[in-house]
Image (tube, rainbow, N blue to C red):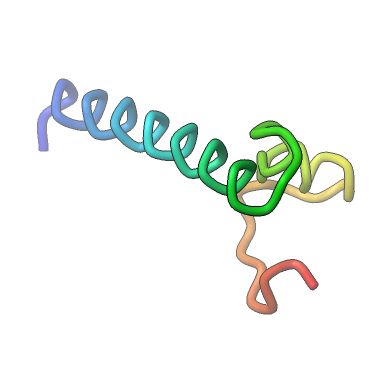
Amino acid sequence: MTDAEIAEAKEQIQELREEVREDLAEDLGGEPDDYHSERYFRDLGGDAGEAVPDGGE
């Protein structure tokens, strides 16, 4: 992959993340930012990039 293709893929992933957070908020209630994984892990003192085999439960 070229750098341009990687940048485009990252942009598409970010757009998808935002869409998923909006859908979760609509389906489950709350605000889209309530479903932001980076904030969740930051609040736990963890790293949003680390694997969580049990889904964080």
